[in-house]
Image (cartoon, rainbow, N blue to C red):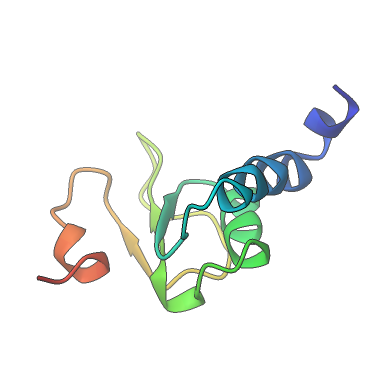
Length: 82
């Protein structure tokens, strides 16, 4: 449980389990700086990391993301084009 005190490491370890199970991480959405750092460390390209504002906030948390979206926006076509 000590890893839960380091949120980036905790999240990265979960993402590693996905990739070790054969998943390909090609895009990600998050609302915290530790989400964005973990996605980048797990191999998600920075141009496929998208930030979402937390409810009641008008700005996204800082990090290596491509674009910040209001949590109610329609933004899926940018990450997953037809």
